[in-house]
Length: 208
Image (cartoon, rainbow, N blue to C red; front, side, top):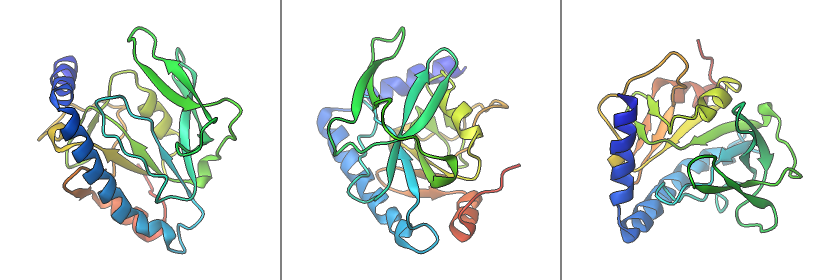
């Protein structure tokens, strides 16, 4: 079932024209800008937001204009599904290298190994890509399990799903190891779960 859904959702993304991708990404970035005002309040000042470098058909969000402390995940070991957060900014050249995703032909950028590691407690929020989401925070990824594994190790951080409206579904299958999402940003709305209120009030989330 998940394989069929992934195929369907990839098709939705690939069907978007370049103009639609740019327009929707701009609107989504505007939503992030509005949300990011909370990072300037005393409880969150100085904290790091962890972002991602998107595939071509994914939302092209860039948070550097609005966030002082930014990090990205570096794939340290593909076979063991190990990623580590490293300080890097997409508006500063020389901090990146290409990584070819095994068996897919896709290439992504991730931080150089020489970029400083970020401690888990420094990270207040993680921007999470995916193929599909529901309003209650269920996420369907690409199937490799990288984010589910990584997010389980930093349970207190806010998890922000980043998606277009065409990726929003009424329901999705959920496995025991699938990481829940706390808030979703699309080009037209900000969707909050009850866990988002906990983070906003206390700066962390206590997960079961």
